[in-house]
Image (cartoon, rainbow, N blue to C red):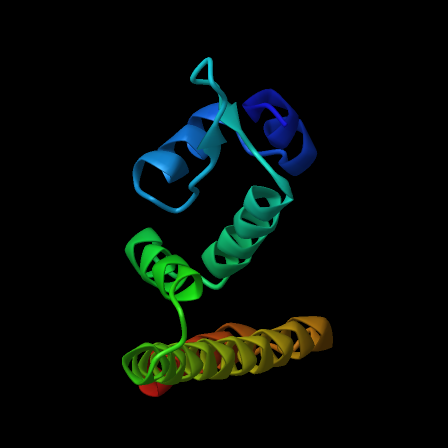
Length: 135
C-alpha cells in the first residue's frame, strides 16, 4: 500500500510516518520506481509504535524495542528486554499510584463542595496539601 493509504488507515500524518521511517521505526520496502511499499507488517509495526507511545515511552526507546523485535532472540536481547520491561513496569506503577491518589483527593474535594460546609475552603486547602505531602 502507499503512504497515503497507510495514513488514512491509521489516522497518522504522512509526515509522521516518514519521520518514523527516517529514525528507523518503520522499514518499508521500495518499489522499483523508489516509492515506499507498506505492507501489513508496517501496519502492525505502526500500531505497536502507537501503543508504546500511549504508554509515554520515548521514541528512542521505542526504536530500541523495534530493533529488538526485529532481531533473532538471544540472551542479550532477552536481558535487554527484561530490563526495559522492569523499568516501565515501575514507571507505570508510579503513574497508577499517582492517579489513584489524585482521584481519591478529587473525590474528597467533591464531597466537601457538595456539603455546603462553612469550613469548606479550609478543608479543600487541606486536601490539596495532600498532593504536596504525597508527591
